[in-house]
Length: 435
Ligand SMILES: Cc1ncc(COP(=O)(O)O)c(C=O)c1O
Image: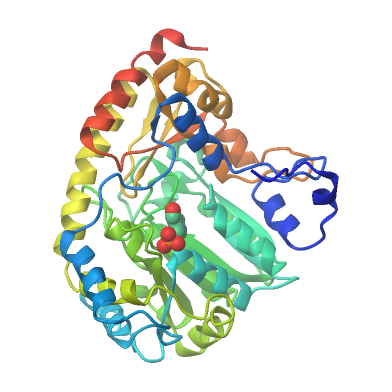
């Protein structure tokens, strides 16, 4: 492992420092900490604990899609793909958006294939935001959102997602007279207060990592309204679009009236088909915005994963595998949520994604970071603290959202049922250990 505490390292200039600071990895002495995901994964490897920290499936995706990748390699699809992505995949993405959401997308001018959603996010933010601009995200946020905003030199402005009772105006997030669903909800009042003339982008993530919330139509309407009012572009990270449970519905914000013309929609095949290592993603939206993003993307990777693009083009035409995955994930979510509740955690049952956030305060653990460090020894399980998805000030002070969620930890349920049963058995030991 590189010695990140070496004095020479602390003297290296550049934007990397901003990315490290934005993700809470820059220590006061200028050295760089590893991410909590790396720390917890190492902890799992060292202790043999069950790793429910990192969100990747422990079984491979559909055999037919794997075979399609092998066939593409054997057929000789091994050189650079066209910069925007192979036409077959761009056409399948456009057809997917039409079939599922009724969106009309031109595969030739309005779709760009990227190296995972991560590159789509990076290219989009670097293309469209810069110094003096504000980029609004939800908080907790996926760490790449904050890192890319910092690399662009823009200012990160955050809107809390909190358990509904903690929000002063949570009643307003409901649709009409219907009550808003429980779990984590958008702080709509703060959203309205922070979006203004300097807001360049509003970066939405639904279904939301780490909270598992699926934004309601009313929450999306509020985002759409402020984006129109202040002429901000909406960027929406929808990598968990097919992983929604119960009666929750994923609504792409691009489908709201007037929004297709100001929205860039990002997704990827990683979560939907359990191929997180393939890194085939995409962004679509109005041609002029996609052109701007492509202009940056072509100098990041130019293009990648040609045989995987062919396999994903085939996968994306078939809706059975995602439907089956969502059904099985819902059952695994129930198993883990029930186990966590039995163990004494306060559980916010997620409506989507791979993740559940559980509050350890009722068990006598006020500090999620501390709990996660002890969890292997106490329960044979690894999780990640939700504060890792929140901002810290330059002096190390946690944001208000980080403080509100200090005792919350994120567990993934995208593991085999037997693994989750073992984890739940370990977690039941926690009640006795509290504090
Ligand atoms: C919210 C969110 N966006 C983007 C990504 C990254 O997607 P990809 O692997 O396609 O780059 C993840 C992966 O965990 C995620 O949770």
